[in-house]
Structures are given as structure tokens and as C-alpha cells.
Length: 130
Image 1 (cartoon, rainbow, N blue to C red):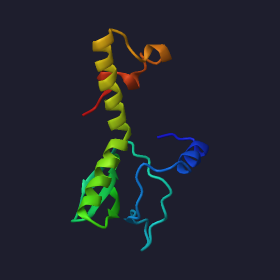
Image 2 (cartoon, rainbow, N blue to C red):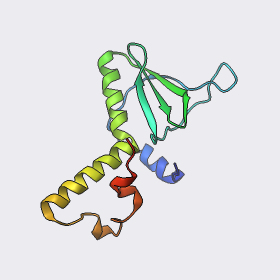
Image 3 (cartoon, rainbow, N blue to C red):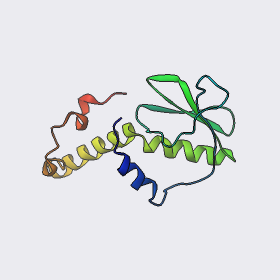
Image 4 (cartoon, one colour):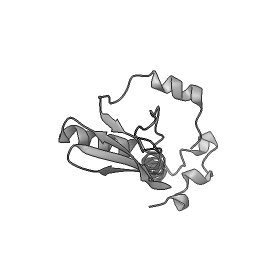
């Protein structure tokens, strides 16, 4: 996924919707220590329960490369897993398509037309993968 570094820095300074200290281990890179991770782009990723109080994030292109997170409680673990799933690009895209169709049913108009983006492939149901 492409991203703008200045935009990412600006986002990092905004108040967080959810914050906590979680233990994290990234994938090993040929040594005993993983390099620090500054940001994980949640595109084409899976959030999976591992052991009690832990979950991992992996990416569809490289499922063996996992980032493991340890929470202070099961409740915190569930909250983080759900928040990360909702924050993924795929979830947001599906939500946009769903609400676009609901608005179209009620009003008879495509709400994206006013922005000139209604025909873009990324906003079409046909491009939606399960």
C-alpha cells in the first residue's frame, strides 16, 4: 500500500481512538531480535487469536510473517482484535459500499457522484473479495 510519510506523521500526532501498552514481537529477520516497527498498514491482513491474551496480525501475501501482541487481559485482547479488524482497509471499503447502496436505495442517487468517483473500481461491488 502506498502512503504519504508526512500524512502518516500528522496522523500519529492526532489523539488515538484507542491506546494501550501491548507487548509486541515482530517477525524474526535472521537474528534473535526483530527490528522495531513504526507502523503496520492494515491492508490485506488477518487478525487472529493465538494463545489466551495474545493475538497476531499477518498479511495475506506472507502469512508466515506474524506480528504477535500480548494484552493484559482477555477483554483487552478482544477489544484490540475487534478495533483492528474494523480499522482494516477491507472493512472500511465494505462499509462504504454497503452504506453507498443503502443511501442509493433510499434517495435513488449515488452519494459518490458528487465527488466524481462513483465509477472508480475500488468502489464497485464487483471488485469486492470475500
